Image (cartoon, rainbow, N blue to C red):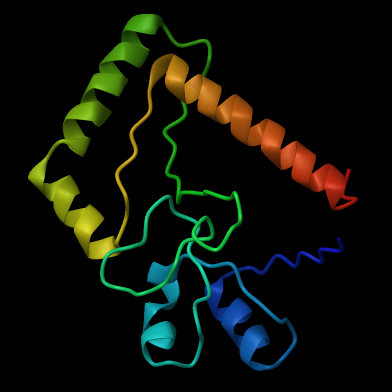
Length: 143
């Protein structure tokens, strides 16, 4: 299997290359290209989320037989040397924020799926994601 990954500086450059036939496909947050997608200039063939996204009729990759689930992640990372009490306080603030009405509105507006992980669950998730990424890069000949 051959994968040619090209990183662009931003979404605008990537869209220009796509419409200029300089690349055959794009992996992009749907929210960032919704105007183009909704205008039917691009066709979404799958979403990487666990479930279909609200408001669009696009199947998940899992529905199509691919064992792939990827979320759009926003990580809050903390320096390892900070005190446990500081980490706990920051974690509590973030959890409280994710339970707010304002956060619910942001999720709805952007079509995001809520997924809050902390502590060991977050540590395990990061370890598994990096192991998976290393495996994919190895299969693609990048490592």
